[in-house]
Image (tube, rainbow, N blue to C red):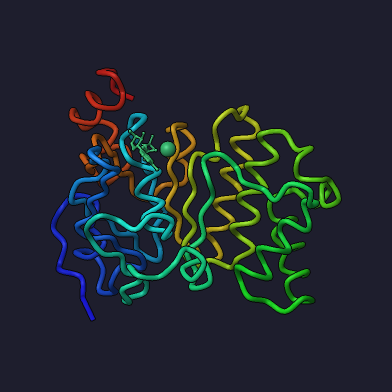
Length: 260
Ligand SMILES: Nc1ncnc2c1ncn2[C@@H]1O[C@H](COP(=O)(O)OP(=O)(O)O)[C@@H](O)[C@H]1O
Ligand SMILES: [Mg+2]
C-alpha cells in the first residue's frame, strides 16, 4: 500500500503540528480536463479537530478539490488518504459510507420526494442504518438544522436557501467524520448566516471535521480554525485565518488588492 510522504507544502500543516496523521489528506493532486489543468500538484490535509475554510477567486479549483476528496473525480495524478488508508480507488459512495460527506454548490435534492424522504435516503444508504434508526437519525438531523417543520414539503417546492439547508441535513444524516461544504452560505441574510454559523458549530461539537468553501469570509471567520486560499489550481496561503487574509499574495489574488 502507498503511504503519504511527510508534507511540507502549503495547506498541509496538520502533519507537522499533530502527532496523529491527518484525518483526510490529498497529496500531489493534479487534475486535467483535456488540455485544461485545474489543479497542480496540490497537497491538502485536514485534522480531526479542524474546521478549514477555503477561499479563492472563481475558477481557482476549489470545487474540483472537493470533488477529488469526495471521490466524484479521479485525479489525473495524486492520492487521497482517509484515516490513514489510501482511498484513491474508492468510489464516492464508498467514501460516503466510510465517513466523508459533501454538499454540492448547486443543491441536488431528490425531486418528487419529501424533505424527510430525502434525508431518510441519506441515513439509509449513506450511513447504512436500518429503517427505524435511519428514521430517528433523519429527524435528529432535521431538528438540528431547524428543518423539522418542513418534513412533508416536497423538495422541489423549496427555495434556494431551503435546498441548501437540505443539502447540509442530507450530508449530516450520512453520519460523517468529515463534512465538505461547498458554498452553502451564498444569498443568505445576516440572520440566516448567523443561523448557519450556529449549525456548523453544533456539527463541529459532535467531533465532525469541517472543510468549508465559502465566499462569505466574515461567516467563515466565525468557524474556521484555519484558512486556505487557492488560486490557479494551487494553495497560495494556509494558516491562521486573519493572517491569511492579511497575506499580500491573498490580497492581490482574491481580495482585488483591498485588505479584508
Ligand atoms: N467537469 C469539468 N470539465 C471541464 N472543466 C471543468 C470541470 N469542472 C471544473 N472545470 C473547470 O475547472 C476550473 C475550476 O473550476 P472549479 O473547481 O469549479 O473552481 P471554483 O470552485 O474555485 O470556482 C474552471 O475553469 C472550470 O471551468
Ligand atoms: Mg466552486
